[in-house]
Image (cartoon, rainbow, N blue to C red; front, side, top):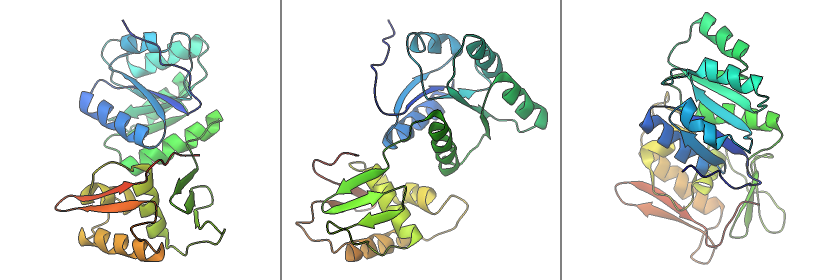
Length: 240
């Protein structure tokens, strides 16, 4: 029996994708970003998840088994579902894009997609839906404000970070308590199309610690995982 997820104040997303690896990977990444996420492998499986509740965003694969993404989107619109819709497809022909928009989708992303691009599209659509993931996070005596792209000390002064340093810190903080391989960090912060020596991550983490004046009593730790990457820990932290 499928259980309807309980109400939540976090932005909610339903993924409908038949490729299990893509679906579960996307689900985990979106949860790490602060979203509440449910997932289904087909339109039929998604039906019970849509009963009695609404989602801020639906991510629909076009080539679903049974009812395809276009038909599913049209049916949902005819039933009065107002959720934002992002269509995923392996095709980028103009006719396919038009078909998706005519079915009621707000955006369209072609596979294979870069995770950073998908997350940016999701954030934009969620904002249009009237909600947004947590924008302010605390760690130790610091506050990271994603909206302002600023890191503030307890006295209100701002830590001078470069754009990449800020993105790296935000990524580590959003994914705290997870072991993050250097390759994943590079893809998320520098981008898959940029060739960067993995040791660059080490240099940037070292610079972050210096700029934040990190000590063993700072209230957060960025652990070095030998041969893997990094894991940030913030005891008792929660987005606010």
